[in-house]
Structure formats: C-alpha cells, structure tokens
Amino acid sequence: MKKIIIALFIGMIGFAVQAQTPVISFEQETIDYGEIEKGADGLRVFKFTNTGDAPLVIEDVKSTCGCTVPKKPNGPIAPGESSTIEVKYDTKRVGPIRKTISVYSNASEPIKSLKIKGTVKE
Image (spheres, rainbow, N blue to C red):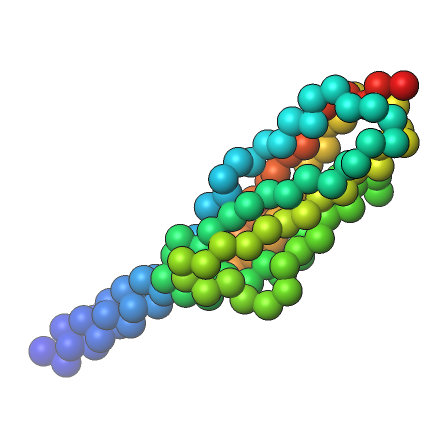
C-alpha cells in the first residue's frame, strides 16, 4: 500500500511539473527579404507569442554569421503575451542571403531555428 501511495505521489508531481511549460509560437519562422538594394534597411522582426502556461525566458539568440545581428527581448514573457526578436542584416554585402538564427529558451522546444533569405542587389 505504501508503494502505491508513493508511486501516485511521484506521478502527480511529474504531471504538475510537466503541465507548467512555456511554448514559443512564431508568426513565421522564415523572413524573405526578397530583392533589396545595397545599403537598404536590413532590419526585420520575428513576432512570437508564449502559448504555454508558464513564463517564457529567451536566454540567448545567435546567428550563423557576424553579418546578421539578432536582438532578444529583455525579461520573461508571460503566458499569452507576445514579443519580438529583431534581426539586422548587413545589406552592404551584395549577393544571396541565407542565414539561420538560433533562439535558446526555456520553452518546450528549447532551441528554435529561424531563417532569413533574399538577395542584396548592387
């Protein structure tokens, strides 16, 4: 009987811990710059919402190249709240854009990959 009660107690704790999870939901995971002119505004914004039931903390945001600078939001995002991740691409570099931005958080999917693409014309 004691083992059954302990097993139920552990199961309830596991369920309670699992139920409190932030979930990051992006409006779009790829932003297409299209064809833009050299020196044009390279700032784009990824919008997201915490669709989970616990505060979401964006721990870090990194890009695959120094030509792409991401900016993470400050502080936790409450359940149901929205925020943004800004990405600025250096449009002085002519040619195709194919970059990945990695978002590290406490969400149910702890590493999320975002992409930017397009072409910078002379």
